[in-house]
Image 1 (cartoon, rainbow, N blue to C red):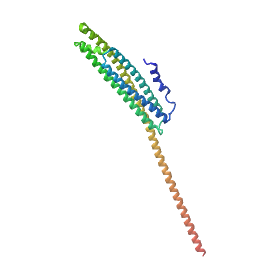
Image 2: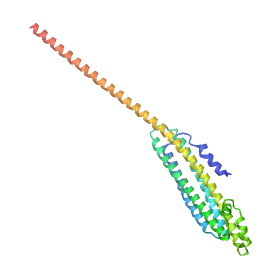
Image 3: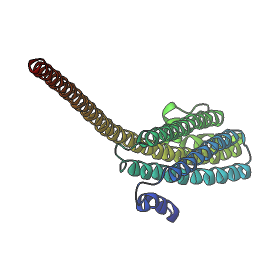
Image 4: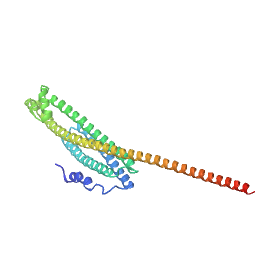
Length: 282
């Protein structure tokens, strides 16, 4: 079940959101915040991988337990960071949808798209790490089982890997010289089985989160298409207005030319009539 902080994060950014279209300076601050979150997630993923590597090399039960607790802690922290980053991206997306075809719409769209890409890359990286070490844990468990019970069948080994069943160890315990070794391996296999169960849970969570971001990308593409359509229509209308304005200017110029021609013609006629009258009088 989710703890209180996880529930708060799930509702937090979406519940508050942004009351209106935030100023561009505030938008850039939020971009920087999300970018820092993604960097922290990537650092956590590298630490998780290091802890997985260490877990494969540990022989002591006490050290293994300490490593497991550290792994649980950072996985929990990473889960919360992923939820918070997802919610911030969704809130930013909702805010961008309020802008329409404003002057800075393209700037905001590009920044948001870049953050989504970085976040999804982080999800892929984390998922790849978990899938990789899930397989390594299974390989290590299989080697340990075959050491204490070389006669174990493939079906018995699969049962131990998938269900943590100890049937394959019962045969090894029958041999007195392998009793202690078999019991130690059995405990180690159970621990690794628990680790695999945690990894599978994380992989499912990452897959669900990745699907949510994919849906967000599709929704964003639709919004972008609408904005581009609006901008295209605005450009068309502007072009038509320019043509109409150009036609009006041409008409006005033509009218002025006609008035000047008429005026000049009238002046010439007046002069001609005056000359005729002058010569008649003389």
